[in-house]
Image (cartoon, rainbow, N blue to C red; front, side, top):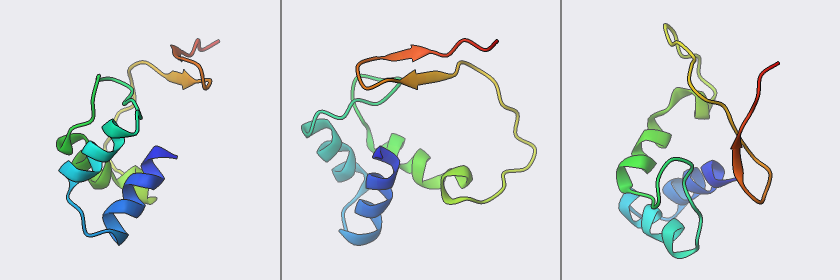
Length: 79
């Protein structure tokens, strides 16, 4: 839902990535890995091919998978 909100704001409101980050911080939306949103976080999302449905070649997956159950973000155990 947050990614969709970011794309819609960028496409329809003529506001900067800094202003989108400020709006998310003011409304209390928390990013997964930081305490606050920054304009650079918004740019990273907007530049990510996966978010717009394009294939990304020569990428390696890895790292920790997280799940947001509406109360907390917690690691997903892979079995």
